[in-house]
Image: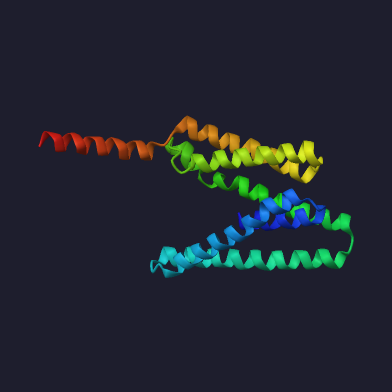
Length: 190
């Protein structure tokens, strides 16, 4: 999320589009806060698993910050607006596709267990709506290939994830609710 908002904010600057810029810049601030918060929480945990996750998260965060510092410097050195826009557009597209693909990390487990509780439906629906709006704006508002192609992929992937979530359901919550009902019945019997 952080990488995506940074990349699209830079792209908004390159194409001089206030809508792309101002809709992503607040995301940079929020995602920076979320990322630092997660790193801080992981650093305070003492389990080996948490420390390993902390180290991986911190390395990814530092790589991202370094990359997003280096790319704008290269773009400034190029001094060609068209090339700069293409480089930032490619970067934003790449990062955004990774963002849209992130639920794929649990798809195997979802299909294997026939339980989609690991796919958070409100987030999937928000991503679907967001990618649809950006697809429409990119295609009809700007006719910008980076915006509409990336978000067409987002609409497709998020649509599949929403359908999977609806098809397989949330058995983890169903099990908890069932166990809660059983406990209530036993309590009434007593």
